[in-house]
Image: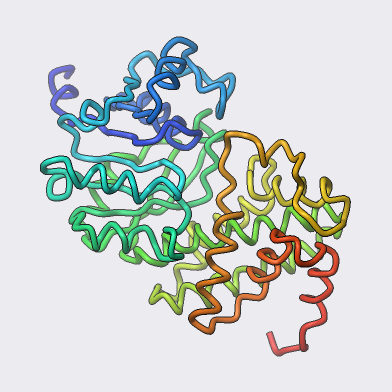
Length: 342
């Protein structure tokens, strides 16, 4: 039995933030061989010494079997699957590094787990496909690292252009507590997770205003419509927005205390004291955790203007973050838009 286990190729997880660490813990506890890559050698060393990721998942012990390295070549040695879990801003440079390693594009299934856009506001999967990564998949769903790391039940979606690739990732990652569904809709699964971060920022801003549950319910519902409009324009399948990577992820991110984007939106309002401007003293602003929605709001606003797509919530959030309008004024601007048929 042990001999058979050792024949299964290890999984590489590229990025030792909260999500990468949580996936490493989950897969290691299921008997998979996992190598967790941290970009900074000193961070890799601290993970080994402390046996926990105190920056992102304090109090959750790392399994002894989880191998931690800052050597990218070692992380990828003999693997068949590599999960990219770095923040979206770091994905392009990491793809460039992987491109220079022999056989990675052709032989390794690369799974994008980041929920963001490239520097031009375009999809990261499109960037990877253009670069020649033949075995590409994306993974997205309502998956807070804090819960996955502790073995709480969760579900997610993996999408790939090749069904064999999606099934391979499903087989590699499906566990009793982590249910993995497959989809052929790469754009829809990836981009639903992108836009929901902006809606979650708006939800946090409503929390900061004390606007109530009715307002948040309306925001989530109209935000889902905005997500659907964006996904349709990007060629996604119509039903994907109602799945785990769309509606599921939106609900979790817009309502959970674990959500960085929701929490940042709330802190923004509280720090700005309901006035124009950026919360310079926000602990989230200066922390190590990346709030994807802040960058995404700016990129999506520019993309929507270029393509003539109406994304009013995205536009309102971007303007608030730039300090052009106070949060409560942006709320009333959206509320006072011309009445429409739902």
